[in-house]
Image 1 (cartoon, rainbow, N blue to C red):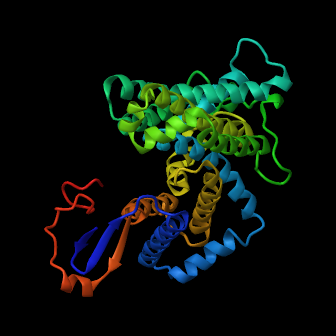
Image 2 (image 1 turned 45 degrees about the vertical axis):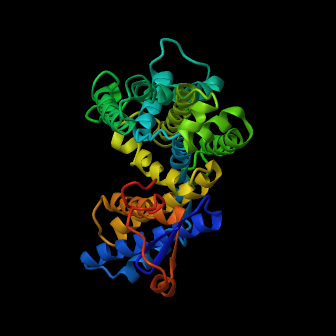
Amino acid sequence: MSRVGPFEIERRAAPPWTWVLGVSLAAIGVALLLAGVIFWSHGVSPIRAYGVIVRGTLMSARALPEIGRNAIPLMLAGVGLVLAFRAQFWNIGAEGQILAGATAATGVALFLPFQIPAPWMLPAMFAAGFVGGALWGLLPTVLRLRLSVNEVITTLMMNYIALYLVQWLVHGPWKGPEMRGFAFTNAFPPGGIIPVIAGTRIHWPTLALGLALAAGSALLLSRTRLGFEIRVQGESPEAARYAGIDPARTTLVVMLLAGGAAGLAGVGEVGGIHHRLLDPTQISLGYGYAAIIVAWLARGSPLAAIVTAVFLGVVFSAGDVMRVGLQMPARVTDVFNGLILFCLIGSERLMHYRVRWAPARAAREPLPVVGADSGAPGVSGGDG
């Protein structure tokens, strides 16, 4: 227990899920208030803006399928990031892993020296996309394990390498002859097109894979030895080493799964939406970066990532509404996502500390020296 003025600050051993949910919702609420300031600065009433957003997303029969369509890649990449974050590997490279998966699937659909039979085309594309995303996350993992290179930097750099690689392919060796002035590959054969729910762009096989991945990841974390090792390593690397857990093996497996999950999202985008490889900014609309928010909101739960992916799907659909209905800038969705992530990070202290207003006790008892208690947040010597 520490005291700062009239406030008592106590560290929570394990915050209850109700408190976690409440703090997360409060962070989102603060982000919405800050977004209202942005609306006001553009001469748009925040009340009118949110009314337009709600009517154009949650109350629109046309927009609801688009929310589901956006939620599919967010869910796949988000579940993978949940696994990585639980092992304290800060993977910021889901965007590049999505592009790597899309590229690998395109290679299988169009550029193999032999033709895969139609019934096996989609399974081969999904397998190639998983392997492509996993391998794209392998290099930063090896650099972290062997040379202690910060994975935030390397995974972020790999995003740009993937972006320029795809641009080179669609402008160069993979550009389809029938495309003329457009930077596209040729269209996938019929066997390489992922079926969708009629009247929507929801490619249901990828959706089923995402739900199965979320359920399987939850079982992995709660029922298996590997899941136990991931949880222990994430909570205390020192305790994991003391228990004989190999951190290199755990980190490697987790990143292969995380990269592979993002790669599956890339397969869904090229096989279910575009039916070809094209400019990377059209393949992934920032899904890899938004998946960080999906994972952060999920607070380590793969099943919760399903719900948070739908929420971010609403945000992406709201971005389209704001651009068309409110004449907001094209990158308004990125600003919205950034505010949510900023507020979530800022709320982390409230997650693990209980703050009480106790002016009467402060008047009766002498104040301790600031920093004397290692449990006090924000001071040197604290455990953070």
